[in-house]
Image (cartoon, rainbow, N blue to C red; front, side):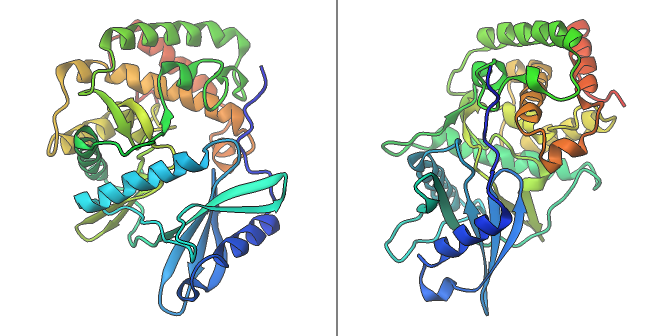
Length: 336
């Protein structure tokens, strides 16, 4: 099985060239200093003018088509109208929000310029109650998603069991994860089978499955006084609503504070919406599905800073979580 290739293979100099090319498509008021802000999945540039700041996103290859990015922007428009602080895309001089830029016929990327959202990014080192804010804003997104009429030609990525944890998953095959012992494959396979059984019984009715952010962690919140901004909708797509809870503790399911994070997330969520008994019962299942999905991500993003920062034992911790999930009815978090 070939490893999924979604990593950006361009140098910083090449990305800067693309960013400058993209900015030339915008009116004079948006022209300013172009500086690489971060490169995790996509490359994000900070654009600084005499009076304003903007964020330019250059999409990585082999992930989204142009119409899928345009669908993301339509949801952001609707959320903005709904009162949620989310990035708003800026029109080019030609009236387009998704720009097609290239270094050659073989190197083509999509770019979007966004209004800047002010705020501080919380981390897991802060008071666990920050997860209440995360749960509350997530519930607002779900409330909107359940009521929103999708525009014509709306299409986003689908996050179901197969696309998350099968060998053909969007982020690759979990078997390619670094530091994973081949002898432990059987435990993970058994866990996947149990998750599949649980979710087939659970189903995909509209009250439990729909359009979600799919990566709403603390790093994608911006807090300013009482205002909560939500960023990075690049992975938004169709999935179970409770996948957003699992995503909230991505990479950190094995930490001792994880149960408290989950409880705070749920408390915040319940201020705006309701988690059904059926959804609540499957929280361990969604947490484990996400953890194995991230195992696949590690395999296809092994050389990224995030993957390398997890160290050599993260895969083994995943196996221990699987064993706990299979042998108990407890939420499989908080091993260390």
